[in-house]
Amino acid sequence: MTESATGFMKAVLHGPEKPDQPSRPAWGAVISLALGTFGLVTAEFLPACVLTPLAHDLGITEGAAGQTMTATAIAAAISAPTTAIITKRLDRRIVLWAMMLLQILSNVLAEVAWSLPVFLAARVVLGIALGGFWSISASLAMRLVPNHLLPRAMSIILTGVSVAIVCAPPIGAYVGEIWGWRAAFMIAAVVNAVTLLVQLVTIPTLPPVEMPGFRSLLDAAKKPMIKVALLVVLLVASGHFASFTYIRAFLEKVPALDIEAISLVLLASGIGGFLGNLAGAFLAKHSLKAVAAMPPLLIAIAAVSLLMVGASALASAIAIAVWSFAFGAVPVGVQTWLVLRAVPEQAESAGVLMAATFQVAIAAGAIVGGLLVNNAGLSSVFAYSAVATFLAALTVFLHGPNRET
Image 1 (cartoon, rainbow, N blue to C red):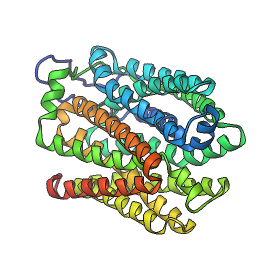
Image 2 (cartoon, rainbow, N blue to C red):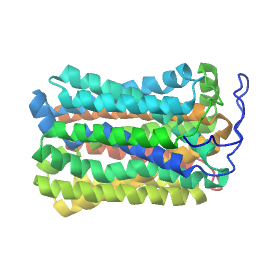
Image 3 (cartoon, one colour):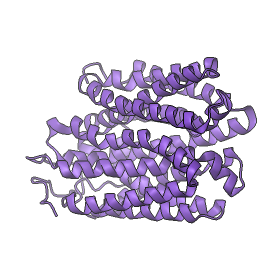
Image 4 (cartoon, helix red, strand yellow):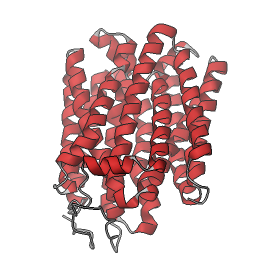
């Protein structure tokens, strides 16, 4: 095992304090967290990548299949605060390892699922892992690298999200078409196992510092800037995920693309998300208002474009790539704004609130998206996304961080 990053404050019960910064960056541990985010995001969004064959095999509608993401999100929203509180006296690396084991279990269970209830159970297990991981990931970055390297560390960790967005949709769709949707989940389980091995070697001892409880969560939630940031997260995430689940179905039915073309569009979308992550890290160093406001505005424009010119294969591909570019910048921008800048002395509490809000938003978006698809057609979800993300951008412009922050 690597040595612990030096200079941690002892855990305190009253009045959380900001932990001392390590003198040297633990880049191996940072990279292992990036691998963790890659596995999480890949597993979380696989149902969207194999939505059609999954629904057919389990004998359910596409709208019902999309609701499996709702189960994951609800479990994650509950898991984020409860895991942080239940494990508040545990070494954080043990918590990370436990979350990775749950990921492996979830993907294996999904691969052998013979009915919708079994598949839902697998997605609930994944939700527990999601909530536990995201609730502490940002605060751990503060303990692995010096303060001046935090934006770079967060960018690396969240690169796992971008790479997953690049790889999971096209590979998941293609593997699902060639070998069946179950094979995609088994591959994800293997990736999780490799990641766990890397984390066992690289994650240093990380004793709890802040020890968040319900009181500290409530105290953090009362801060005005936290309220604004959480509202933005709710609007952006619900707007994005209401439509994201049905991107493949949209491409099959509106521009009527075949599986090879869909895989290429999803690959371009993923590359856009990767570039968006880099752009978000760059903007976060200069203007948190810009990195918080511009992505939802671009998503709103892309959603309107799909409504107006979605029948064109080229126009759809460009709009989806722009959408993914914009959303790729969201996590690093929000994490930097909410967790690392707004309340650095309560980083873990802020991380818990953000993780819970993000998952509530995913659940809300998936529920709204499923209802709209089943009752008003595919186009309606993009109208909802346009409205929600435009309101998010407007909220940031009016009440977001100052230009200097």
